[in-house]
Amino acid sequence: MENIRNFSIIAHIDHGKSTLADRLIQECGAIESREMSSQVMDTMDIEKERGITIKAQSVRLNYTLENKEYILNLIDTPGHVDFSYEVSRSLSSCEGALLVVDASQGVEAQTIANVYIALENNLEIIPVINKIDLNAANPQKVKEEIENTIGLDCTHALEVSAKSGVGIKELLETIIYTIPPPNGNKDGKLKALIYDSWFDNYLGALALVRVIDGNINIDDEILVMNTNKSHKVLNLMYPHPLYPKKTKTIKCGEIGIVCLGLKQVNDIAVGDTMTHKNNKANEPISGFKEAKPFVFAGIYPIQTDKFEDLRDALNKLQLNDSSLIFEPETSIALGFGFRVGFLGLLHMEVIKERLEREFDLDLIATAPTVLYNVYLTDGTMTQVQNPAELPPEQKISRIEEPYVKATIITPTEFLGNVIKLVQNRRGIQDKMEYITEDRVLLSYSIPTNEIIMDFYDKLKSSTKGYASFDYEPIGYKEGDLIKLDIKVAGDVVDALSIIVSRQKAYEKGKNLVSTMKEIIPRQLFEVAIQASIGNKVIARETIKSMGKNVTAKCYGGDITRKRKLLEKQKEGKKRLKSIGKVELPQDTFLAVLKID
Image 1 (cartoon, helix red, strand yellow):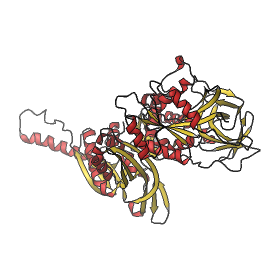
Image 2 (tube, rainbow, N blue to C red; image 1 turned 120 degrees about the vertical axis):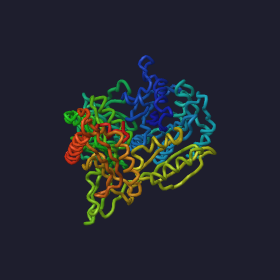
Image 3 (cartoon, rainbow, N blue to C red; image 1 turned 120 degrees about the horizontal axis):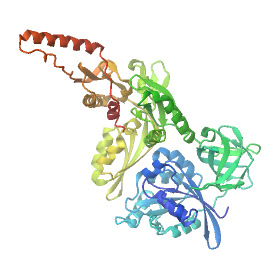
Image 4 (cartoon, one colour; image 1 turned 30 degrees about the horizontal axis):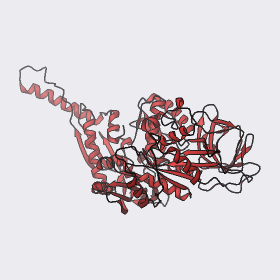
């Protein structure tokens, strides 16, 4: 155990975390140069294209220093806020962390959020200034920022370039000398933390574990403590990006993959504890939480006969992603589909893209919503995530909505734009502090519903892309909320119903109906588009009818003949108006929801 080092890399998106992992793997000789590719630990195409880590990956590296063989377990973490629970579990499996900060960008919002998780787990943090080969790099300024914002001593911070390999040897030596070895009880009762799990077509559900106490051996009877189910260990492996290495035992302090031959990932949830069935640990490792969905949206196939294909695709994705939940729902406008729960907006985008790519489906998503606590006049409480399920207003006593604590870091020149944007989204300022002369950190409490649509895009465009944003849920608060319905030709389009703040209902309704007027094609009869709260219409636009030239056949003659034909047409349009149905094109939903 003296020669084991377990560490993680934490950073904001695009600060070079995956590239640094590539260099460490290369320096330790775990992968030969001919097999090396960029972002070798990111296994999905989507991850490589977008340059983000969605699924945490781990690798076991061997490194020789001063004739001593060391085992370095690199536990990679996703950088995005949607996966912060996975980050916290990964960090609780380590003794140290490399805090990677871009030498040209400086400290950003997610850097701070992930450092706090690392500090809560009492990790040894090594500051690493990356991308020093860039022309805009200013390592000294970044060191001052880290000291002022996070309070870490940066006098011995390492300056590296993950792209060119500068400083990587020094970094490996620092990891060995600075990060403490694991300190478990190798003769004690088995305790292993599951910090990741996924589904393999050949081996079934696999658990990636860090052994805290004791050892795991092949053929052991293992008990998963939160589910209270026991399983036999069929196989054990050490993780590797290309070829996991089989082993007969995973010892105390090590990380490894446990194969139990399970058909579902739910049986080995992230954060759960493994122990021996016959020699049980007294209590599980603390901090286990079930991954709860944060954002909900309806997902429907554009071709209605693809409903079964969508169900199969979701079932297959759920094998790899236990945080994904879904249930069937129907919509008058969109037909049959599913109400799907996601960890956040990036998670939603990634799942939708994977469904379309990997399963060749054309999908449409309704506006994302959150989970509301609705207290009724009879004293009961119900949870609502689909606006169509909201009870009538007279039965509602109050509605509570979820809030998040948002951290925004922006250059001072855009401070006014950011404050205006957040105030428009009903944000309440908690604090504002200057990190440096030209950068400000803002902390706000904002209703979750206000940030899930297009907040991030608006923030980036109002700050020329320089602001960074991070959030964490902080519970529920009462809000003055109502359901806004959209009616087309007198019929409510359920897929476009939204829950909004009463103060913003008129503005939102006006925007929705004017957007729809541009998109819905003209019909042979006049079509009214209305935004309503209950039975009260608050905004309306009218699409004029298409006129067929019924007088074309008249050549000369008396005007009464033409008038007679026009009157006949007018009567027909009147009749159509009361019985005519408007077929809404699919891009109506896409344009109104602003989801490509």
